Length: 349
Image (cartoon, rainbow, N blue to C red; front, side):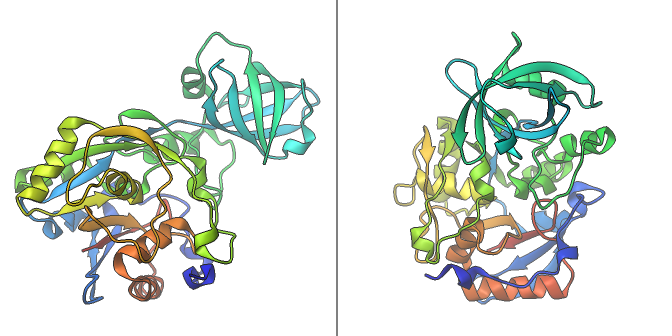
């Protein structure tokens, strides 16, 4: 499949730079994948679209405030993204303008008020903008980032080091049910849910199960290969507990639908699928779902609008049909829906 078939025209002003004033105030485009019929709704109406006995599957990963600012001893400003801590506690990070950094150079972290916080040494250049840092602190990475870090917003959302804006993003670029720290990007389809909406669904008789997939920086990696099949899919850590697998399996056995919230939940469920059944498990998944894939578990997807030529758009196209999805996106553009991480949502049934 040629990657350029995942192209579509998007006016730049439709790329959402801020979330809706209220989480559930986002718009919702409902698409029937069999008929391609579309309905314009509000996300606050989501309970009208999910039936008693269905199961909502939510990714409970928690976003680490992984974006940080620093400076060199010369005063030159640096911006970084924490990826992971290695076995020795050293940080693996992405650094903008990393070519300006030299091995063993001193780096000074800045806090959210742009004051000096502490130091690190640039130990090793790892390639592709990645560095290994030795941080001069007894605190672990998560503790430090909770003190100095910013929400790791995708590059199409423009932000500086503004502390007031950062505080808003730290709250809104996180689902209300996030509980398992480890992601460096949000499972954004879940950002629209409020506690009240989840309670409304529960009262209606909709079951709820959680999976964990720690979203990595690779989720923003564009497909650069001419053929989709030649793209090397990134790997991400997942976990599904036995109690959640039981809820999902019971729902399927009783004829209810599995409604996956976000492409991350889809990948996790389909990774663990054994026919119309899943097993609990922990591991890494590099499952690349693209047109031609046969879904085993997922019956409906709640998702945001995705970038052209992205693996996320390929997944949605696999589920609903490429032409159906592109037609829905054209409708969304015409109706001035907001796109990408802070944008509006789709429900595909």
